[in-house]
Image (cartoon, rainbow, N blue to C red; front, side):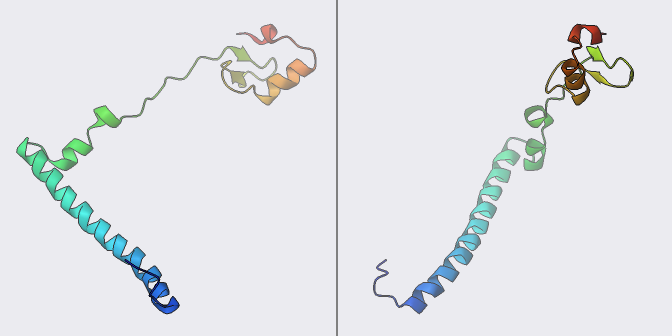
Length: 105
């Protein structure tokens, strides 16, 4: 398409119409592809929703909490597993000259 022959007004109209047309076509393509996928799934004896909701492939790994390795000397509710960033209370304890080994559980 030769755009050089179009006026500025025509180009601006095109600029507004193109995103609308892209959106309309995407919706149509998605609907067509969804029907194809539903037909393919049905041919195998499944529904598309059943295949997409399969938790085996998309399940998130849930880790178990790690046991605490260190406990605050005065407030037993404050603990740290030794993983990740040091809590502020550990950094303060170490800054005062304390040894991490003395906090070990």
